[in-house]
Image (cartoon, rainbow, N blue to C red; front, side, top):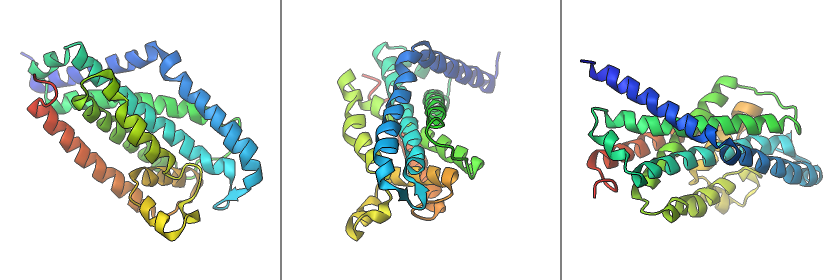
Length: 259
């Protein structure tokens, strides 16, 4: 009889392969649209408007917004893949099979999160490739850049799972992305530096976790940030621990799953 470790290893690999095949099979719907959106952002904000703005924090405006646009694509797609996949598992009632199987809930969560991370990184890489047609920036700190984008992708994939746990319909799946995720992302310093804001609004912006993720990624690419990069890593890790614990608690109790 196979050991529990072997069973969980096979289960995790199977889930990851399924998740990757799921979004690559419909790549026209999952991977291409974010690249087109990035192309529009870079054309309108980077080229047309950016030429009039000049520099931002010592960088060309288009160079300044590229990290934010990449990170926005990573965040959105990591979240979307996890929430849609997990809710689909609930809706089609095969999630129960995973829960009754001899597979640890950590492995189940990791499988869905890994799928979200895979899609987020795939889209991020494509958006980064598109940005090369507009800018010639070089990554200043490759290891930090990879670390921040992977951690951020992991965080929002976990958030997607939590959203899917409470979702009771397909409409519920889009509530958080539309009313929470999108505002936080756009107000996270993609198109501007928080140093430009009045003191009050700069202080308010510091409560936006997305700001730390975008600045951490921007620091890895451009070498500049609105604050100490250690704060970015700290905030991301804290949110991963908190949301990860919440997700495991929900799965363990079967909240939103067991009726």
